Structure formats: structure tokens, C-alpha cells
Image (tube, rainbow over all chains, first blue to last red):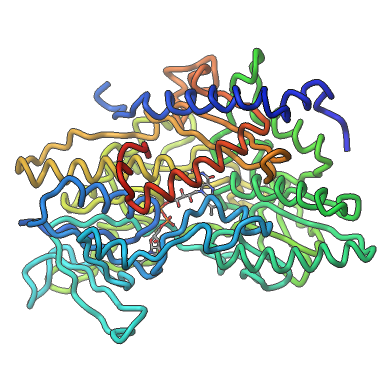
Length: 44
Length: 485
Ligand SMILES: Cc1cc2nc3c(=O)[nH]c(=O)nc-3n(C[C@H](O)[C@H](O)[C@H](O)COP(=O)(O)OP(=O)(O)OC[C@H]3O[C@@H](n4cnc5c(N)ncnc54)[C@H](O)[C@@H]3O)c2cc1C
């Protein structure tokens, strides 16, 4: 095992409070990608 | 009055049937033909495979829901296609064979005005000698029964590890042309975390085996993505995760034979190697179902409808990788020979792979097949339903709803471990799914802001939230249609 994720990074990755805000941010970001729509590529 | 027949009740078939039923008046018939009496939310099979969910948590029976929603349901499998009818039946039909109940084994001509083939993939275990779920200590998580069996075997192994046995675990792809690396990636991380939870992690050597050229290829030619304030390649991200979790990897491997506890594989260098294991989960190759099609005189017209999977409006002209373009990918999923037949989800034949094709020195194609994940499966099914609705309502032959995978984003929330406070997820969004190297030449064919990755507990919560949201949607509970595909 090689430590590739620093202690600080791991703390932010697993801290429920930080991650709660990350969850809101992620949900919105995912929604933007989905709601960004889709279409054809040929006539564009 | 029109009759729309939907083959398959997976993500694509169920999305199409539910939207058709919601938007079309009752004078139009919506018929679903599917052999599995249950709807299953396949992405959560990963958690069944580590014992953190039961099959009942990820499935529900289709018949009561369809009866309530006025969708005609036949628990049957399609066996052949007759898009011109035959000498006795003037309407197009598919031949269906019932798989349950009193009618089991009997065949019926199911006529249609419009046909949606959403039969997904055949899990082609036979393509790899000795690969069969539960045989030779190798397992699958592709269905909830496979995942349940995988967990029983893994649980037994954990017991042995607690008694002091050192073991080898091998997870990845079980064929040179397998797809769905994402599912295997989720499973290896979940297994690793479960071993830690059971305090036996140090008793196991865990190895990833894959037909990918780079880690993090995922059958999508890899990704260049924003990661925090950095720009990272998906192979760097996966390498970081694997090293951090102590997972070894074998790449460029086309598994061709599985024996009791041994996987044989060929590498791109043309070498034949083997890897031993005590527990393996290997994703098989996916293929079409081998359907036959006939014209009204009974002549075989299979090659008008199928090239493995169903032929749609893609450009199938063979050409070198350098000449591939997003324009090759289909937009409407309509069969060019029969305009009333469509194939969304995994059922359509892709024009080629997304990842750069590579052959071993012996000429074996070792290239991931292109994935069609849940989101594109749902989106393509909905746009097919919308086009059929327009065709019915406005007698319109022009298709307005389009969705090429070269102009569509996808979110892949890969579970990296289960637990409300200890879980983790690798959240990746990508736009477009098929890289457009002309439009985004400097960012590996994708738009950076919309192609990003992040790791952490929030990813697990999101994956869990999606599990509940999509099962709610599939059950067609109030306002289900507000939840996007
Ligand atoms: C373990 C695993 C994890 C995954 N995780 C994710 C994830 O996290 N996110 C994501 O986006 N995607 C994920 N995927 C991919 C996702 O499950 C697929 O993209 C999706 O299921 C494809 O939908 P589909 O409707 O085309 O095919 P399927 O879901 O396979 O549905 C096919 C349907 O056709 C039916 N059928 C089969 N044969 C016949 C026949 N002869 N006649 C009639 N009906 C037939 C089947 O019973 C089934 O109902 C995962 C896949 C696997 C295997």
C-alpha cells in the first residue's frame, strides 16, 4: 500500500459536514450535466 | 389507435413504456414483453455482491405495476422478428415465447405498429472458456442472482481469512472485448472496503485485471477531467486510488479461459499468462441475443435488422480509428430498413468502440467494447418514446428528438465503499460520452467543466440517493416523471 491521499485530503473526503455541502454541490453539478440536454451531431 | 410493443423491461424498456403510457391516451396500447418478472435496479447489484443489500432491496415485481398503469405485460421472451408479417398475418409481429405461468413454452405472434427493442445485452459467458457464474470460483454481479451468489462465496472466504487463510482476489474483465469496466471498478473498491471492515484486509492480495490499455479507460478512451483545481487524467486518478488501497493491476489482458482458481489471459505483447485466485469476479463480454428476422415470404433478413445488436441510424462503414467521428454515432435509434423499429439502451449496435482499438501480436482484438450506461440508456429510450408519440399524434415521419452519445453527458457515480459515515464514491461526469476530438481538441475530446471527478463520502450518499430516486421513479409513484433519466 502506498499512501497517495494525504491525511488532510482524507479528512476532507470523509468529514460529514464538508461532505454535506459537497453533496449539494455534486447534486447540482450532476443535474446541470443532465439538464444540459442532448441532441444530434450531424446537422449541427 | 396504435399498438406499441416494447421488448425488455430493463432501464431502457421500462423508461420507454412508462413515458409512452403517461403521454398517450388509453386508446393506444402499450405492451411490454420481458422474461424477467422483476424490475431490477442493476447499479445496486454491487451492494448485493458485498452483502450490504438484499436482492429484495433492488427489485420489484412488474406485473402488479403494469396492471395498475394499464400497460399490457407478457412474461415472455422475443424469439424472432417478422417486420413485414407473414403469409397469414398482415401486420408486423414478433414471435414471443412465454417463460412462466400456464402458458410457459407456448409461442404467440405479438403484432405491433411500433416496436422498441430494448433487450439490452446477452451476458455472453460462453465466449470465455470455463467462465460461468459460480463456477471455477469465478463470479459475476451482472444480475441480482449472480451478485447474491458472489456474496455467499465472498462471505465464506472472509470466514476462512478470519481463521488465518491468506487469499488472492481477482476482479475485472473476463474477455478481451468486455465492457462495463466501471461496474468491476466499483466492485473491487467495495470488496476492498468490506475486507477492511471485517479486519481481514491484510490477509488478501487484491488484483485488478482488465482489457484496458490504461487504468481508467472505462471503454471511453479515458478522460481528461477537472479534479479540484487540477486537471487530471482518469488513469492518474484510478492509479492514485488503487495505490492508496493497495490494489495491484494487470492491464492489456484478454482473459480467454478460466479454470478452477486460474484465469488464463493473452497480453497485447502476444504473451500467454495466467493468474491464480481464490475468488474472482469477471465481467463477461456482452453480445446480441442472436435473434433471427424474416420477411413476409419467410426469407431470412436477419442482416437487415442485426449485426450482433440491432442496426440503427449509425454509420457502420468500416474505417480506421483516425477517421472515426462522433457523427458515426446514432441520433434517433431507428432501424434504417423499418422505420417503425427502434433500439435504445444497450440493444443498438454501436458503430465501433470508443477506446482506440488494439490487437495483440497474435491478432487478438483486446479492446474494451463501448459502454452504454444507465443514463444514456434512459435518455435514448425517452427520446425514442417521444418520437413515436409524435409519429402517432401528428402522423409525422420526421424525427425531432435526437440524442447522440457524441452530444450527451453522463454522470457515473461509482461506489467505492458502503456506509453512511465510512462509505465513499468516485463521482465522474463526462460530456460528451463519445469524445469529440474536433470540437474539444485540447481536452481529449471533452468539455472540461462538464467532465470532472471527485472522491469522497458525498459520492456514496449521492449513489444511495440515486438508488432510492430511481426505484421511486421506476415504480411510477406520484410525479415520477419529474426525476430526469
Ligand atoms: C453490475 C453493474 C453495475 C452497473 N452500474 C451502473 C451505474 O452505476 N451507473 C450506470 O449508469 N450504469 C450502470 N450499469 C449499466 C446499466 O445497468 C446498463 O446501462 C443498463 O442496465 C442498460 O439498460 P438496458 O435497458 O439497455 O438493458 P438491461 O437493463 O440489461 O435490460 C434488458 C431487458 O431486456 C430483457 N430481455 C432479455 N432478453 C429478452 C428477450 N429475448 N425478449 C424480451 N426481453 C428480453 C431483460 O430481461 C431486461 O429486462 C451497471 C451494469 C452492471 C452490470
